[in-house]
Length: 392
Ligand SMILES: Cc1cc2nc3c(=O)[nH]c(=O)nc-3n(C[C@H](O)[C@H](O)[C@H](O)COP(=O)(O)OP(=O)(O)OC[C@H]3O[C@@H](n4cnc5c(N)ncnc54)[C@H](O)[C@@H]3O)c2cc1C
Image (cartoon, rainbow, N blue to C red; front, side, top):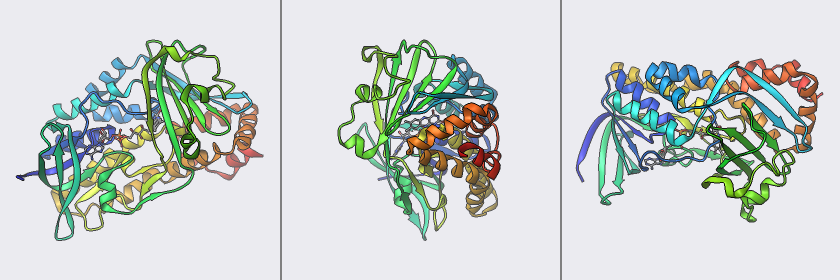
């Protein structure tokens, strides 16, 4: 086993990892980006980028933004939420958001990282962390091609390896909580009635998301309680339970096999390793529920915060703790809103009530959709007046 040295080893080339690696390389760091998959790789997702993601993509570089715009014929102008009875309400964004297959989006970011000087190695699976005097000092990873294990030493390790992050598990403190849900996602052609709106249909139990991703293809995501999935929930049969979904497409128009992921509702108590030398970003740090579609924005914005803390640490020798504080400042409101909505969709009667209120108060529907799309701070919704307006 030979040892190789880097300023930073980033584990996972999804949006969080590629964006972090790109920003670090641009700041002059020697960066190695490892992913167990070969790109383009797919990822279960509704594939809608919340509108505020556009600003982060712009900061990642005009080339990145223009590549995403060119690859994204799908443009969403708002979200429609449909209650179990079939009653729906629309909230509009202040601007539009992109929607495109993850095979394309993630490959654009991974390629941009490589162009910025990051060394990318695919089909390399990280298995262990290595420590020096209590601080993380690298990773041990296995190459799929030949089964060889290597040690990659680094001043900082970034765990950007998603929902079931091995880096987070090795650091300890991974927390899970109810409600535990499972998702099934498919690409389906010729879905009737699809517009420039994303759709969320809440049922008893679970929910379905529709996201048009251009070229006549819609991402259909079914999210159900873990227990339901264990009882053998079947994708297309389950969709018929939702009044706003049934009859709008046929299983034979599926253009990509169904992908499954979950359970979610996992987060790490500490985004920075206790003894230093490592931090977590994206789903590896925190992922509660996909209903609000904020995961990609959080991954990209988290990458900006992580890169700033790492550059500071590499240049001044400071600890990475500023990252913990920055995440708290940036995400606390978003976490509260996301968890409130994620819990509420488990109570169909409550969703029925909220949708009825929002139909009478369209300005509140816009406010809610803009806050979950990160166009407005979550604090705009988290006031007694707005919260009372949603349910009373
Ligand atoms: C059903 C569903 C629908 C969703 N819909 C939306 C949506 O519409 N909009 C939105 O913004 N968010 C959505 N999300 C959330 C979004 O998909 C995630 O938040 C986002 O992908 C997080 O990015 P990431 O880079 O942290 O992780 P990922 O995208 O999961 O990337 C992690 C990478 O790490 C690699 N990896 C994993 N383990 C290892 C290892 N041991 N060694 C090396 N590499 C490893 C993987 O191969 C992968 O490439 C949805 C999620 C689900 C489940």
